[in-house]
Image 1 (cartoon, rainbow, N blue to C red):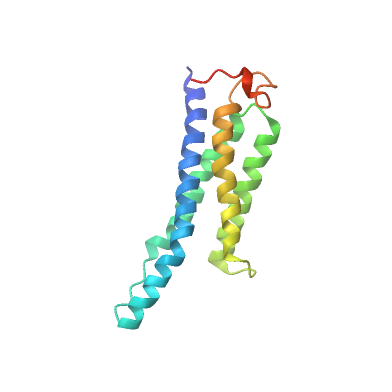
Image 2: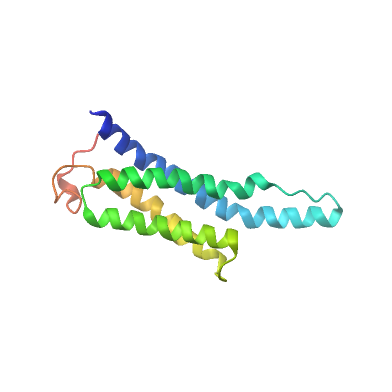
Length: 143
């Protein structure tokens, strides 16, 4: 297997992990804000800058994974789906950071979940030279 192909396969694994961690981070944030609020009532207010900066870390790792996965997928629609999902996630994260427009907080789950599933699907079905292999999974030989 060539190095180029290895990077492509690993980019989907990396993208799945980064998107899953991002999703867990988004799910856990309200809990931590609630805990932070209760500790501030007691007087032990603590603000964690590192927790808020994890968004940027996840979106950066996800950018690299989407770049490599989109570059090496066998289906054109997968490229668009990956980039659109990533752009939506990045826009929502930047909107949260800079408070550009008012959005529902739960909106961030949609592109996160989409990226997880797209990376899994791409790794499983869209890593071959045949143009029809992605849509016809019965002809695929898995590693």
